[in-house]
Length: 335
Image 1 (spheres, one colour):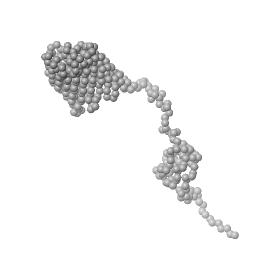
Image 2 (cartoon, one colour):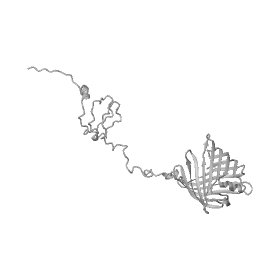
Image 3 (tube, one colour):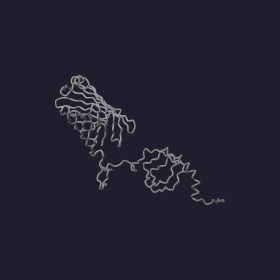
Image 4 (cartoon, helix red, strand yellow):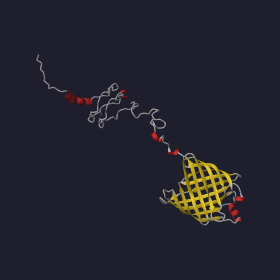
């Protein structure tokens, strides 16, 4: 018997891998258990995955929860050609990765993390600092009535608690130079986003009586500045002041401000020319020009006042004017 030997050229390992690559691509890896594979020591940073065809691999049954990939450096890997649409990531535990749930003591309550604030000390939120302000809404002269009208309020405190001093009235510039004013000292506190409450004491020079005051002021719908204040005098008289004001801005400097006021009392007081019910109605329209960062605004306008109800008859009996109107000019400012 003759034995024939067929000579084959030497085939290197790299050439053998190339010959077997079609077989590897066609292999089914669905039954492979990758859970026990330890890939922590593998360096895949120089591998080019763009030419790998993984479309035929069935990885739906793979258990990825036991795979340890902590030592793998995949920063330079190209994943653009990999199709991983069939992989189930629902059972993967990623709680140990960076970006997970922070521990309860991750940040200190004052956000300092134990780092000192230095020579400037601990920062203070602006809303917690006590501040002060002065606002003069009206300081003008009525030409026909020959009097000066004023209205101002000043406050000291924070955004949550303030002490407010408010006064409004008129000063006669002829005859006896009489001054009629209503001044109140009150505690101010926000009630909601658009409304603030006030409570305190007041003094009325017109009837020379003191009173307890409570009120509410804020912004009604359509940006109408609204206020309502009630005064309980020492003799049991109750006074109610209602007011509304709107700023109609023509441009960055010119503003038209219409304003209305209504006053009512709970009982008659003939000595002070007061009748039960609504007594006075006032309205004025001012054209203002804001300057100096809108902190100063001179104005010109027209004012109108009239008596209501039984107060009209009482004024006629005492030969007083029932209605009055006047051209007015003045200034409003705040700081």
